[in-house]
Image 1 (tube, rainbow, N blue to C red):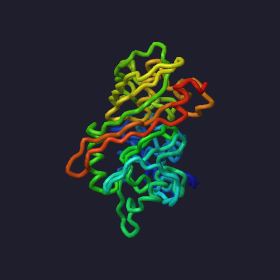
Image 2 (tube, one colour):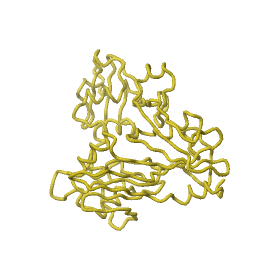
Image 3 (cartoon, one colour):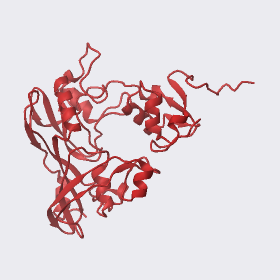
Image 4 (cartoon, rainbow, N blue to C red):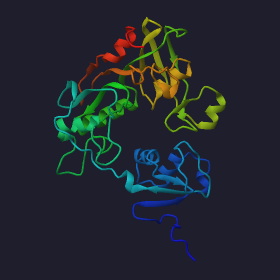
Length: 330
């Protein structure tokens, strides 16, 4: 008797696809293999599908850093990661630091997601941005400004618990220009963080390459050992820093990264034994009054070109981090 739940490669319930890993992709990472096996899905949708549990390998959920083997059956529920447009929320709180006809720089508070993940989700920074700048998704067109209709205008993103400056393009031309500038390292992004002061050099550069953590998809791994570099195929990453101030056992540190990878700063400082204050995921001390990791996107600057005028915008340090540095938060 035929099994009604069995599926043929490439066939499945509506919006669900089954693919079989070929010999050529044996040993490839799940996210990279899926990007090749289902080429009509963007890398962002593949990543989101894995994070949402919409991908199964031989019937089991696995992290995106897991490798696949020849003959594995991978099922992806495409319907769960449909590229639904973000919903505008007029009147939602939004702190605008800088605005021109082509760009906007806004100040994201800690605890607010940058963009929605699920269709219909609200309360994110993008919902507030669309509530004020509706032109990012024209109502009578199939086009949008940005990487997707879920994150219109965003040139880059911040972790939910990271506060600070986020750059938004208001025109398609400005977005394309700034996207290339970000990729080439021509956007000057500075961060402020707080970590333990003892043993931290006054300045330095951290250059461990980064890979998805093999056992915890919430984290990334700084590959300090050559064995890990060979095993996990990490991406290069460089973090320059200088200590601005030391007080009460803490150091306020300014960090410069040209092309920040996911969790780069957090993983790099953890790798040198100085995890960010409050960053429990990477081994940081628990600070109940802070309630998050002490990281703030303090400045974003661009030298300008024919499409986007030069700008240099700073986001003031939030009160929770300022109190920590001043020794009023324990």
